[in-house]
Each structure stands twice: as C-alpha cells, then as structure tokens.
Length: 75
Image 1 (cartoon, rainbow, N blue to C red):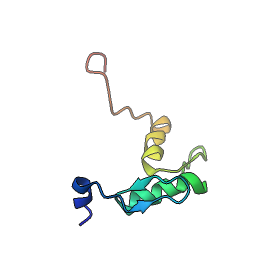
Image 2: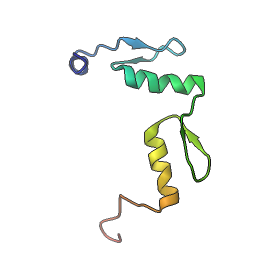
Image 3: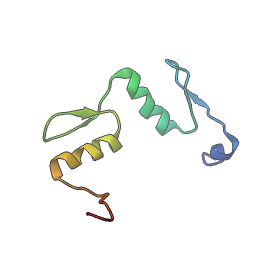
C-alpha cells in the first residue's frame, strides 16, 4: 500500500508547521524533528547531535577517518 504512493503521488502526511507533505510516515517523523529541535543522534566522540541518522553516520567519518568514496585516479 505504501509503495503505491510512489506512483500515485499521494502524500497524506502533511506538516502542520510548514505544509510540506510526505508519502511515508517515517520521512514525516524525521521532518518534524527539524521544527521541534529534537536531535536524537549524538556523537560519542565530540557531543555534536544530529536530526537525521544519515547525517550522523556521515559525521562519524570525521573521527574514524573512513573515506568510502575515493577518487578513481588518486585514491
């Protein structure tokens, strides 16, 4: 049922703060944190916190030194 929204364009989850609409509830919940100020993902190394888990995961590379997208020519 949820996948059908990709094709139908239906976005039943509307943000009451800004009016932006979402097709799935998880994206809507994540968006709501931008208005509430909730930042549930906190870095144990530096204490910086993030709204989205993906942004937190990218930040973690600062501390681990991981560089997953190397240049094909120079590494």
